[in-house]
Length: 234
Image (tube, rainbow, N blue to C red; front, side, top):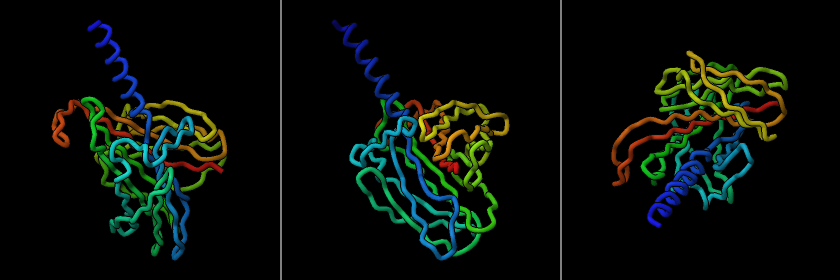
């Protein structure tokens, strides 16, 4: 009986860990903005591949307590106020200069998944006029050009870790139509995928690292990072 109980425990633990791992936080917004016009932002949590959006009350641990930041083209960093709705959070800002605005979230969940620390992050870029990409000071992020793509175009995305391109990273591309494909970044941290269907895509990079420490008085042995970005195809 002890053997059966222990085996069952391991199975349940594995399933729970996979369920958490499959979930992601992502930002949805238009990649094109206009000076002086309010720009709306939505943040979701769930499994994009299966279009399962969790209600805010069911978000893992304290993920709903995340902070969303706006980095302006002149590199000013501003914390945006957010509001929680039934199944997402909202925020907005008014662009006042031309260039690329970066919306970013990085949130290490308070609770561990077994002995794993989970860090959820997301990035979305908004271009106002001339779009010149600049590096972001984030632990892990995915970057794609801030524009709407046409069906049939190739979309390039680059994964960065601590400011450097991350080679051999696993990247999952998910379409709102249910298409999902796993890629691996090349030596330059880049993947390319075809924009097959019209609609929205979420691109997620993940990285697991053996790192021991104590988080909120709980010991952990590994850190999982999941970073997303949002792509529009018209």
